[in-house]
Each structure stands twice: as C-alpha cells, then as structure tokens.
Length: 146
Image (cartoon, rainbow, N blue to C red):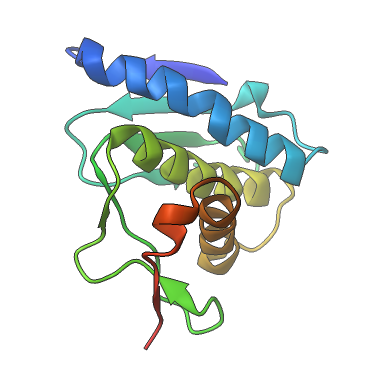
C-alpha cells in the first residue's frame, strides 16, 4: 500500500496509523487473497471528518482512498447487516478507527478492481467481522439495526 500523510500530520497519530495498517491488511489479504493491495494509494488526514474511496472512472479502478484519523467508528445502518454502532458512534480510539476505516475503504477498492457494484453492505459486514474476530469487547457494544 502506498501511504501519503497530509502535511502537518501529528507524529503521535502517525505511530497509531502505522500500527493499524498491518492489522487491516492482514484481514483484507485473508479475505481477498486474489487482490494485490500494494497498488492501493491511501492518504491519511488528521483533519478530515470522514473516509472515502474515490475512483475517477471505470478504467481507473484503483482510485484513491482517503482515511480520517478520528477516534470513533460509525457503521452504515443496513437491515440486512443487523448490527450497527450506537447513535453517536463507538469511541474506540484512533488505531482501531483507522483499522475499521481501512477495511471499509479497501473493500470498495476490491469492488473497484473486480469491477463490481459498490456496496455498503459488504463493507459494513467486513468491519463487523473484524470486530467480532479481533475486538470482542467492541463487537459486544454494537446494537441491533432498527
């Protein structure tokens, strides 16, 4: 993965991001072994309010990923997924939030590479699966979708 840190990115947050990246990549490489994540371009920002995946066209499937480094996890509320973060998000800290955001946006990266329809269901399922398997305390804090 190609990492870009915005100008003035705090050193303390950079250390947390560097710890988060291998966790997210390990999960994603196990889930999508057919995908080479080395070409993903990821920009980290301490001032963005949210993360996103952007691809300029169908021909540019690799796109760009922007990751914010806040402290809360927010999950899409999808009835088909059944679980979500409580109203106001989960205050998990920067490292786990970055893991979750990377898993979400790298799932969109996979959808782009495979020229599939972009789906928030798959991204949210992956985030929840990571919490269930690696962060049971935080998984237990998720609430049913209403």
